[in-house]
Length: 490
Ligand code: ATP
Image 1 (cartoon, rainbow, N blue to C red):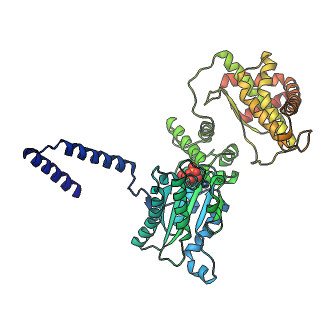
Image 2 (cartoon, rainbow, N blue to C red):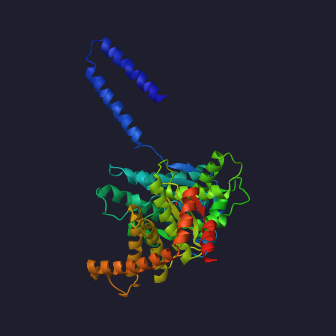
Image 3 (cartoon, helix red, strand yellow):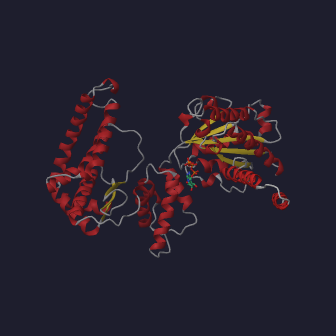
């Protein structure tokens, strides 16, 4: 209204001055400049309060977050401090001011913060670290002040006595001081956050808890991490096998599932997947069922969805017959060695191009594994080398398709050396000459190549049988593969 009135009267004045014979061009130019400046600044949101506000309409409960048992437990404990603040006051317990959630992307940090607000019936305000970064000194600090004021104000207006402020990507504004090119602005913003955290008290009308999330805990300024600021640091890790199973079940709650669906198998196949990946697996599986005009999601849809999330969409690229044959031989080589070393370890193999791969063999380990012996690392190297060795056995040469396998084998070899598992024993690699490292690396790779070569030679007929089936059907399941391997034995 006011804007329209000011605009209308300005135009009327200009017309009047023009008619009265005054020179109005400079006035027009000046007015134009003011309007452009207003729109530019307005668009950038410099003076806007952009924080998203949710009251407890954030309907995410802790039971909708799979796995993350420890993280949920720690967070609930921290929340009990703001929920039962009277009891904690009696014991003289200092209130918690901040909880820092650290972990890889997509593991559920934002979900945990939302569930925290729901659990504690608190006002929930969310902002991202990047919203506080401006080239103008003082703007970031002003926004931090506003965020906390907003939290308290909103809580009061909704007659609540608790608020949770969630800052995602806190490393953007809370990075080590002095490490940015525009020091002053970053330092002022961080200082303001420290001031706000120090000012949080239990006896205030509205008790505020700051929850922050980051993928890069190592980048944060020491001052933020000291006791009295982020008192709790909660690790939100990639889910374990049980966690993955829980997450899959949560996201499948509202979807029709076929009787053959086995989440245990899918959880085994998805080591290293985050909650976000798993959500995508269920969604992609539903899309595939829809495309195939099916009423329910089956195990085959889920298996294909895992491949899609892991490697990317199927490609239209059509390799030549000769290339297909080579890819089939290569993947069969990997699969046979993997099965010979660990029976039941292959999920399936295919020569359908997907992402950057012309074909692939996927393993399905029985359990998640975090520690490896030298023998286990060597076995992994053997599986990597088997693709190229199979090509050499059948075609008497290998191809560029083995490039990634070799890189992986070299990485594993470095792991053997760095963990003190090579014949050199415990070494400081900085004092090892590059030549020596390379010699040890070649030694290990050569030893494993000899094993792989003789194992494949001994199973050459099986190799041929399997790759011919793979060329014919494009896909061989782990069970079919095992049957074909055992045929030779019997
Ligand atoms: P980033 O670090 O990239 O911000 P984040 O850790 O905050 O990621 P969220 O935004 O919480 O991850 O999760 C993204 C999506 O992944 C969620 O909306 C949810 O669908 C799914 N998800 C992640 N973790 C879980 C989990 N533990 N249980 C159920 N769903 C999950």
